[in-house]
Length: 72
Image (cartoon, rainbow, N blue to C red; front, side, top):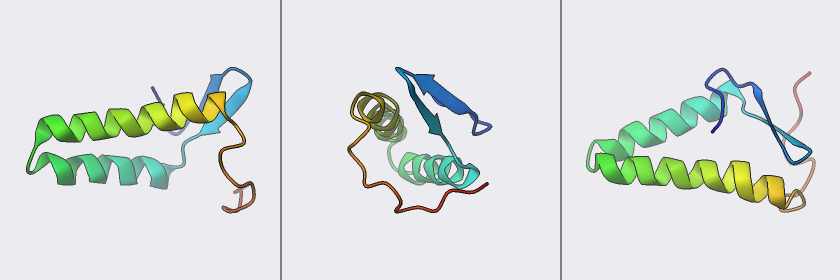
């Protein structure tokens, strides 16, 4: 799930693009949680990845378009 270099993920006609900042945030979140509970950190990150990569690709209208400016 996901590409550590921020490459697009293609699934069911929707392209998901991970920004470097979003990857860094996810890594930082996991590291922070892992300080107290490594197993919980893994579960949280896997749940976030599932929600983003599966639920969003299955329901592309979940978010409001235009909230985050696209970078060229």
